[in-house]
Amino acid sequence: MTAKVIDGKAFAAKVRAEVAEHVARLKDEHGLTPGLAVVLVGEDPASKVYVKNKHASTIEVGMASFEHRLSAETGEAELLALIDTLNADPAVHGILVQLPLPGHLNSELVINRIDPAKDVDGFHISNVGLLGTGQKSMVPCTPLGCLMMLRDHHGKLAGLNAVVVGRSNIVGKPMAQLLLGDSCTVTIAHSRTKDLAEVCKRADILVAAVGRPEMITGDMVRPGATVIDVGINRIERDGKAKLVGDVHYESAAAVAGAITPVPGGVGPMTIACLLANTMTACCRTNGLAEPKGLTA
Image (tube, rainbow, N blue to C red; front, side, top):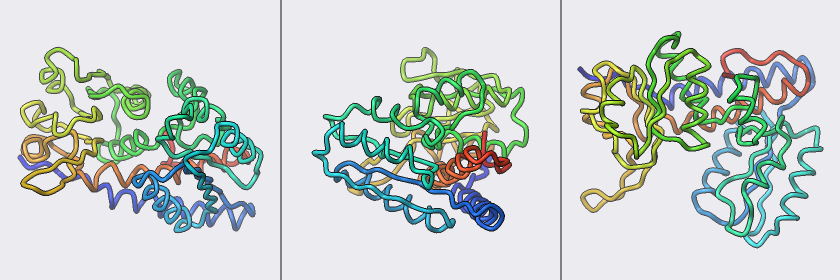
């Protein structure tokens, strides 16, 4: 068996195109332009690349992009004051504070200062609680992207056995909640799960989000299962730097029915879903119908 490759780049391009259509419609019919504000504190190289890509993607779909770059020495009061200003700005529908923050800043305090309605990362405690109780919320971008790809591949997910390997607040826990919302039978596993291989083998849907390079191998995958690899790990192999996921791709692809590659799988969907969330936030704020297919 050779697994079908779930092309995240192509799917993300489709999502961005749908967002762009909705943006154009909002402008034409309601005079609204969804706006995304991104706050970057410090000079972390990876964060700078992410922010640059988010800005380009925001402009590409016709949204307004507001960048705020602050020095690494920025104090908590100054950062919180900026967030308050963005919360009050009607041109800003989504606010994202790029993580990680410098060590002297309290990430939880900062994230929870964002208006939950503008929390397009879905990290605010109110959105976490709403998602956990099955209510309408802003959903974290990476799990939302995974859910979109799974729905596209399977159609209906009801009744499928899903195993999520990883329990982070950013991916693992919200991913499990989203799969429960689609009526899957969900198991959350992690690095300390006993008989992890046997747990994984029961999965129709296996989501790897544990942060360990190639931890999930082909002998842990049920034949025909759908494997979603959220991991992005930099390793050195044969003297060269390489990006790999949490899944050993070659062995898993020989067994699975479908699989996401790394790179080019889940990664591109994260920014696409950030744009979708900003669109959703704009619609909700203005009492308009949400775009179908772009929310959980």
